[in-house]
Picture (cartoon, rainbow, N blue to C red):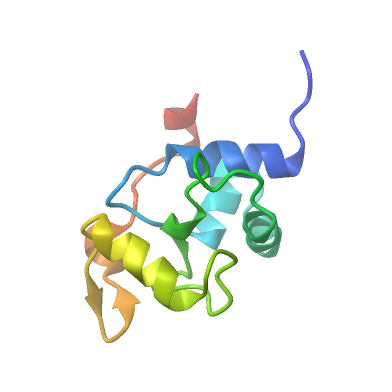
Length: 109
């Protein structure tokens, strides 16, 4: 069986985040196999080869902030994508208690 690269593992997790939910960078890293990969997640998403199938706009900071340098048009575009999916904001942050995706590594198998 072929081994997935770190980026492929990250993209596989991000593809599973359902519309109307978000995940933090660290959460994606943890689900991809290593919670220390949070910065790698950011780098991978910035290099997203297929934003139509890898919804990187659904990844935010642990406190719900969007990426100031969102790779596909800036923070306002990321906010727009999230709002179109019904995600709510308070003081410019995603309401994580309501919209954070609840998933464990076992659920991804």
